[in-house]
Amino acid sequence: MMTHVFISYSQKDAKRRQQIADILESAGITSWFDEKGIALGESLEERIFPALQASKCVVFVLTKNAVRSDWVRREIQFVQKNGIPAHFISFGNLELPEDFPKNITGIKRVAVRSRFTVKQRKDFLNDVARVYFEKRAPVVTVVNLKGGVGKTTLAANLFGCAHDYLRKSVLLIDLDPQHNLTQLLLDKEKMSECYATSKNVMAMFRGAGVVDPEVVTPSNVERVLERCVVPLKPSSENEPLFHLIPGTFEVITYFLGERHQHFRRDAPTWMNFKRFIAYCQRHYDIIAIDVNPGATLMTEVALSVSTHILSPVRPDRFAKYGLTLLESLLEKIEGDYSELKRLVIMNGVERAGPDQIEIELRHELSDHSIPNQRIMATRIAHSTRLVAKQAKPGRKDLTLELAYHGGFGAHAIQTDLRAAANELIGELGV
Image 1 (tube, rainbow, N blue to C red):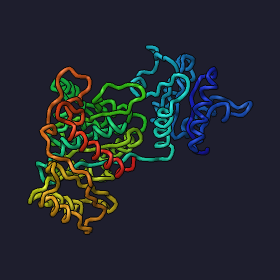
Image 2: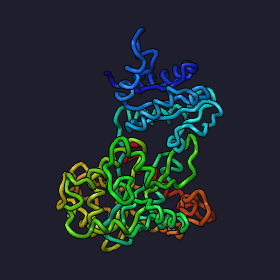
Image 3: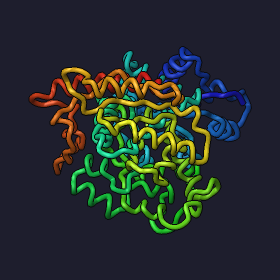
């Protein structure tokens, strides 16, 4: 069967279905639906589910008719059971009934009044095309083996800008045992809740089982994601996602004893992580992993799935050393990292302009002996706004303390962060 996107709809909504099919066709995406895919006399049951199974993804056309349709509900259940990527388009002022399948209620939905706006059409096509054409989100490990470079705070702000101003869906993963990114973004109440429910990065390795590990499979990977992810902002229709998988000191378990016990290439822990990241690459625009400033197992684990490295650097006499150590690490660990793209960004520099140390450092780091390394043009000047401030209790938007949100005297750092986010997104190609 040819590659296609399956359109699920109520027979009473043929015009809505055709609107979706026409939008997909305009982007070179082939659609499949019952009227087009089933010949006269063929069994609906025998054709529908094989067509669902063979689809790259499914678009559900949700209307008042569709949410009452047994066929639509059966197709949703089939998609959930088989881990097939799904997109939901709701028409009109639609309220999902209480008995509707629960785990789609938290999924991003595009709410269309009658016809798609230009922006809705663009966002919808981007989401579907990423799966249909097998475009994978870049995975960026934020790392410098020299500490004190402002790595975690800068990462939260840069990827926050990518979400807030450039409307990208972003997943942050905190793989640092000290979990500083988690402490920066979550208030104490939310952190306590995550601790009590074991909502953290361990689910990527163990599956959704809290006590007994389980294998991550296409049928349960969505449940694993729900088990560990924390929305950083209230979810709403038509909005990109901004999620965090909190860190925990418990990952220190994987540092103890023989590393190959958990992370030999065929180990369940290792396979679970790779399957999980591959799934997330189909559902977010960017995945960013924060690791500690050391040559640890978690750094190696993050690098193994990464497409890019982002290394913040402060211009001082020891600045290059952390990147030299990182290069040595890549030469020693198992795997081919020749295609890994490396970005360096100057952080905490003088706002007036590059001083002599920064000029010399840029010259040294422009050495072409390090493959695929590029020094970003954007500079992040020192700012008292760019400091670690934990989210205030009771806020639904956990990003409000980040510097890119502004406030009195924040215009300069906002400008820096937006420029850096724009340049970063260009480098990532999203």
